[in-house]
Each structure stands twice: as C-alpha cells, then as structure tokens.
Length: 524
Image (cartoon, rainbow, N blue to C red; front, side):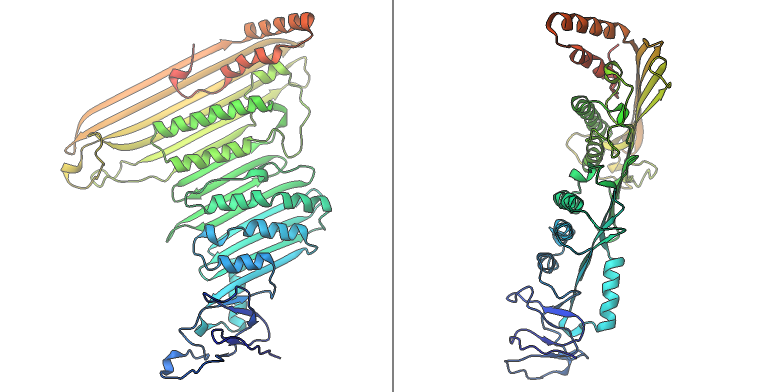
C-alpha cells in the first residue's frame, strides 16, 4: 500500500511502498520526507501542459528540482550531514564530518550495524525500485570514492566502517561481527573519531597529507589490528590510494597517486626502542635528511611531505602493539642504537619526460632509507648487536642555464639551453656491540657516504660541457673510550652525590651513530 502526503506547491508529491525521497530546493528543508516515485503531481498551482516534452515518460517535470532518495527513513545527525554534503562536489566536502559521525554513532549506540545511502536523481528520471536497489548496491560496493576502516578487537570482534561517494550518491555503512563490543571498546572507538576524520580530511585535501593521529597508536589491550584503506578519484583518470595496516608485528603505509608512490614498513620490536628523547632526536635527524634529499634532487615537496608524515606517524609510538617486550639491552647498548624501530621506506616520484628532442632524459626522483637490527646470543654474558642504517638517492632534472628563465623545451634548437643534472647518492652507518663473559669488548660505529653529481650542459641543442663531481668519505670510530669515561664519571658522581650522570654522558654517543647522508656532515 502506498501513501500520499500533502506537500507545498514547490515540492513534488511522490509515492512508493519502499523507499524515502526528498525533493531538493534552495528553500526546502533538508529532511522534509515524502514517499518515493511512482508518479509526480504538483498541488496548489495552475499547471498547464503547453509542451508534452516538458514531462518524462514517468510523468515527472524535467525542469523540476532534483530528488534525493534515502535508504533509511531516519533524520539522525549523520543522515542530516550526508544530505548536506551531497550538494557539494569535492571529496573533502563530500566526506566532511562523516567519518567521525559514523564512528561515534556506532560507538554510542546499541546497534551492531548501520547502513545509509542517499541517491540524487533528476525529478523527471527518478529510479524505480529495481534500479534504485541496483544503484544502492553499486554505491556501497563499487563507488568511485571509497574509504574503509577495519578494526579487530582483542576480544575477537571485527568493526568495519565504509564511506563511499559517486557523482550522484553518498553512502556509509558500519558493521560489528564476531562478537559484541564491550563498554571499554565502545569508549575507545569514540575516542578515535577525531583521528579517523583527521585521516579522511588529510587524504581528501587538495594537497593530500597523512594524518593518522591515534590510529597509529592503538591500545594493544583493546585492539589487535587496524586496516585503513582509501581510493579517491582526483582527476579524469587519476586515483589517490592509501593502505595503512598495523598489527602486533608490523605497521605499514602504502600511498600512491599522480605524483608518485610512498611506502613504509616498520617492525614492532620494542626491545630496541629508546626513550622518548632519543626517538625524537632520531626522527628529527631523519626528517632533516629527507628534506636535504628533496632539495638536492629537486623532488616534489608535497610528495616528500607525505613521506615525512608516514615516517613520523609510524615511528611516533614508543611501544609496539603487543606492548613493551622484555629486553636484555642496557643503557650503554641503547645509547649506541638509534632508538627507532627497524624500518624500510621508499619514495618514487612519477617520472616526467619534458624534452621532446631528447626523450630519454627524465625528471625523476627516487629515495630509499632503511634500518635493520640483529641481536645474537642467548645470554648477557656473550652476545652481540649489529644495527645498520642505509639511504640512497637517484634523481635527475632539467634546469635553465639562464637564471630566472623558465624552461620551455621543444623540438627547436633555440629552446635547448639547459643543464641536465644526474644525482646518485648512497650512505650507510653500521654500529657493532659485542660482549664476552659479560664485558663490553667492542663498541664501534662506521659511516660511509658516496655522492655523485653529473651535469650535462647544452647550448642550442649541442652538448658543450660535462662536469662530474664525486664525493666520498668513510670513517670508523672506536667508542669504547667514550663509554669507559662515561661509566667512570657515573661511578664517581653516584659516590659523591648519589646521582647518575650516565644517561646524559651517553647522549654524545647517540649523535655519532645516527646515519649521515652528506659527506660534509661526517666527521672523521
């Protein structure tokens, strides 16, 4: 049985036994609900049919305002926000506030599932029940823009949140499977709302950023894993994607888009992590080197900003998801390590071929960095630690030979006045610590840096000069003397004042083991 409601002269009267529709106009309330379209009748005004083509074959006026069809006939804050957001066009505006609202609604409600979609149709072409069902399925399962957050609790429940958008549709869905959420889990979910929305806002920004916030530092007592994925249309045939995963063993980020690709994986080995001060110092050192590499290789600043976001977010926590593991490392050992979790990171910029006269010349930028740590020995009496850090830069770019003049390379020799830079750098740092019968017998740090700059100069399309500038430095430091002095000073201070000076004295060692990727930064 259908229902008929009296509406204003400016609102189509629509009937259906199944779904709910909302006519959209500048003066209409966002959730003034009418029934769905089997026919459209205008009341309260004199409608004269002067041209049969004014109407569709379903009886709707072609020039009438568009109609919104809601999957669920509710007027909660989330649905109100969705109704408003559908009138916007950008991904940022479409998803504004929806992630936080969906997470909060699931966390604070008693329901384990929620699904809502809004589909916009022209008044003259409102979908029938079958077409509407198909459109809703498409919107929930295969939309142009999708964001999915999956959380697994330690109690066994799986929480899945989906947000999706097409040109004429917006949908959200939340499910809890595998068990019921405890009050503590619901409270923890609600506390993640701002971080979830922050991640969405960062991804959908005109210049994307990675803002994981608390999503990268989940309480291991409540959550065993997290998976955040997104696929967003950012151009005619261009897509920005994100995959962030974290569990008790690893954390990883994989982002790709028109500018290039960023990948980072971090191992959750709490045994090698330093204190907050040590970690902050090491992170800052790496961020400075990332900036230096971007500047040297003329890399994309926005892509490097994403790379730095990923590195900072995944290294920011001092504990793995499984909690702090017991460790045989002492203060001396930790002073000779970076304090960071082991990682593997890469940034690859989309190559640009801007010179039609020499199509093999590419403007490109590729950067890699890593850290691995190996601890051998079953006892403290006889064990060894080796930590290795590496970085590499491979870049090339064109630059005008005339300062202040922009390049406009074409097939004419007159445009071919430029220098082509080729950059290749490699760096590594290795720290070795060894104990024999409980005595420290080896404490050594080795640094190697190679930098190569090759410049080809062209004038009127002819190669006139080639300049290659190689730089290389290697250094090896025996740190046993510094450590012995620090231990001696600490014993003296404890005897005289009762206070330890060891941690402060060992800070000097930490600076010497951090990776340096510029020859000028390595002291012999």
